[in-house]
Length: 432
Length: 143
Image 1 (spheres, rainbow over the protein chains, first blue to last red):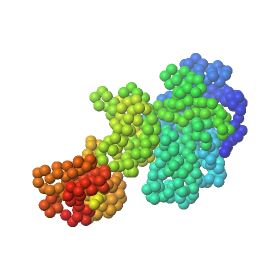
Image 2 (cartoon, rainbow over the protein chains, first blue to last red):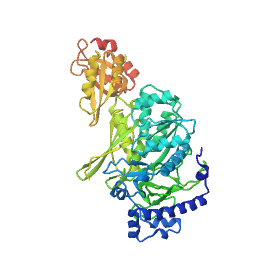
Image 3 (tube, chains in turn green, yellow):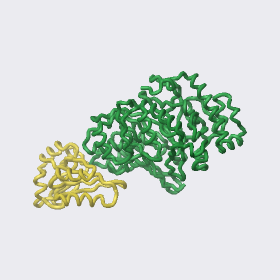
């Protein structure tokens, strides 16, 4: 199911022309209307007129989360607030949030890319969408909401939380599509099972999960327990919210809606652009946003771009699912560790539940990694040696993947905090 | 000849063990024997109770992680060398004891030991041949 055949299956050459025209406008417009961009272009000694071909974009300065925060709340808007119809904000766990403004047309574009996303997840006007992303300043809830409305589906704006009611509504309203974070999907599955509901027998057919990094192993677990096919959707407040890219039913990379968001991959250290296929930091330039254009926004997400052909027919460039956000990256004894690496090991095991929490300590001058994981009742044995050998096995598998030793602590089922939105996977006890 | 043992996974958190004892107490389930094996992070509490089925149900309801294992209860004469005699019988038949623990009370003049053994049938045969008395669940709960 392709929502907008004209744009989603557009010949690549034609799209490149479109991107070029749109970029030219965005660079000019932002230079004129946003003092920050004028200053930063001037400082870098570059003018919008220097943009003569697509690859020239990499000559323009990149903008970071810190730059956005320094201009809190509306400093990077290209239009006065009177032209802005809605405001959203990122969670702002570390200081002030990032504020995004949308004009009527921006909201239209957002609904359009979310309609494409939902169609990637097999949503049609016949479907009943249970939207368990949080409603509010967070872009997840309303982003999915207006996309589903555009598709013409029946939408249940249940928001996150109250898991018991989620299961009841799912049964009673005949929900066919679930949208939420993957960790919350897992929580719903577990809760339903504990209520004695056979979750695989419900009408659910598909799930669109995003807003946090997750692994293929987690996908398989959710798919099996909810009886759905699960796709990964990607987005961020700074760029628009959800709807930046989405997996289709091939589940082989996410289609970047690159007629609206232009992606690049750069080396996060040298800031040099990297060729297609190489892994690096993902950078976005908005091509159509009016209120809050971003030019070369550094997402801190590590991924690669690869190819533009997919059996589904879409010609958008594909990005690999984000294996780690640099924000989530832990540096332990000098080694970069992503929580998703540990997740991939734990979820491939049968002996443990798919719930874990990572603790990092500093003892003396040494960093210590401790992984708490819930023991699955089926594998609980009366013999210490069995549990000890499970312990060793997990530690060994994690060590062989990430290269550093860790301590495993088996804990009782249902004792690790369940997520109702973005899961908190790590507690860093070091005072760095 | 087999006795049901219930094992409970207990994280080293304060009050966890007490919770088990309280739940069993409230449900009028009597603990006949127990052993606690522990590591720095968790312990395994092994219990012999008078009503194993009820115990499983109430502990399950309280979200404990449980497993059920068959063990054997054996009379050991309460004199020096008594335990060695029984272990000799098992050892001579090539039977390995995973772990064992004692009953507080005696069965007539004998001590009672719980043995966790992989091949119970083989052990029962060997013990019988060695004239060792094995107690069933009824005998255990009536001690």
